[in-house]
Picture 1: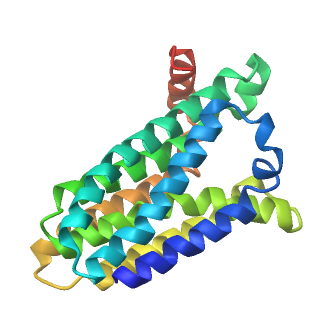
Picture 2: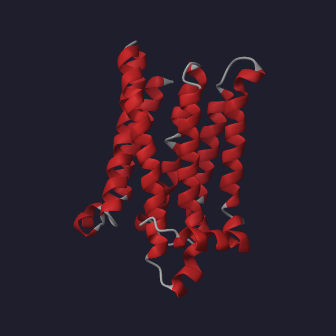
Length: 230
């Protein structure tokens, strides 16, 4: 599994260049500090996902543990930057635009939450290699949506409905979680933490198709927008 995780992180890094070229990398001077910070932290996190499994494969445990402590700080900062970017996007909206599009903050906040949950669980289960590795792998999965949605939007013909841009990433997300669950060997109680996490993530992803359209979510989005964060 360590080598596969490193290769997956390399693939995500390559896709990031393609996905973020039209709106960010080709116009990097026009982006604000929040975007630069989020991009730098996300890139650093993926590089950690490349290096850390290789350290495990090479039996370099002390270096793996030291870099893991650094990684917790990077991951926490990446989560915070994701929340701040979501807030910044709402603050920049006028009243009419917020009424139309404010509900879509669900997705970036959901992905940030999934990333944070996977990171916390990876830390809590760091003494159980099989669970720790799977939770670390799960931290990469929230990146699928921003990458695949942008690639579909910028490089392929328009889709008939906006929500369809999320479907490929969600399916791949679910398949990856299912594969990580199936490959987890051991007693049922030992596998339970990751399986519960996987079901929770599935509920959050399915919630994208209903929760943002509820009055409760719109109220939350308005409250979140009013916070003095950015």
